[in-house]
Image 1 (tube, rainbow, N blue to C red):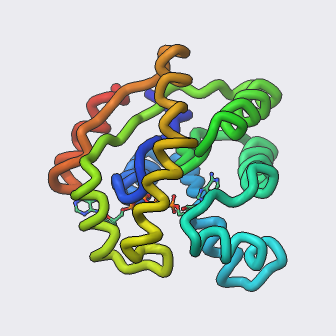
Image 2: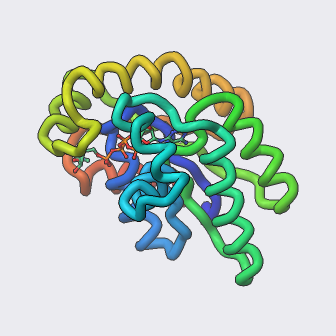
Length: 186
Ligand code: B4P
């Protein structure tokens, strides 16, 4: 069974929704950098104060900050005896992908699968507008999509070259998409 995987895809593709379900079903550690950053904002920490304005603009928080969060969670899990993990929304650019590769080499825990969730822009925008989070207004969503195309989409070729990538159509019901993802893991 696949124990170490990551979810890649545009904002609103449903990475968080599917990652939560899969991690619960398989007993994996679910690491969502978006959720972890929002928790820091909520707590009013120095890190959260730094992240808040960047997220509200729909831009990427600094690589160093996000990497420090991911490193500490994966190291904690290994110190507690190890286990599988699912990275959701990380990495989001090539520098983060390279740094993640180095970290996983250090930990001796290579990625087994990258799931790319694909969806049309019109559906993404509709989903995010109906969610209505602080960074879900139309201008910010369009900017997040541009940031995705410029900075995150190059990871598709990066992981395809490493023969780790599998794409999934992310349209349809939550259950239908869940079944498509489950079929990749056996
Ligand atoms: P994220 O929290 O990662 O959020 P997202 O990409 O907007 O959404 P996701 O794809 O997870 O969609 P979801 O399941 O929620 O990022 C937010 C911000 O954090 C970024 O813009 C950035 O500033 C910062 N950040 C995060 N990670 C970073 C990193 N590594 N480096 C730098 N900055 C980082 O689903 C969206 C909506 O669709 C929900 O309302 C859901 O209920 C609905 N939905 C899901 N599946 C559906 C389905 N099948 N049908 C209908 N609706 C569905």
